[in-house]
Length: 81
Image (cartoon, rainbow, N blue to C red):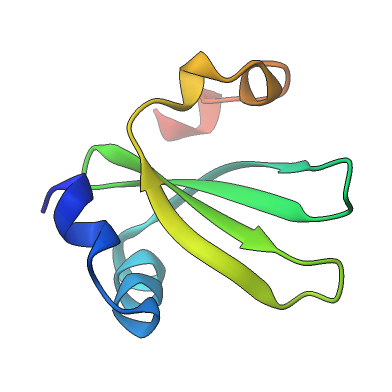
């Protein structure tokens, strides 16, 4: 599956694949109070954004989390061995 194919799925389709095959990597908080969880899935990364009231805002695939300083500050990949 490609990033484009994943992003074209319905919300439920994305959530189902992420639950079944995703690997949790890290999370961060935004200045607005949202929490963003990052997962590895099929060789790309998926962000799940939760609003301050714990409702999911979006699920989307991204190519490279390592271009974002906010992830590089805290991500720990040692548990993936």
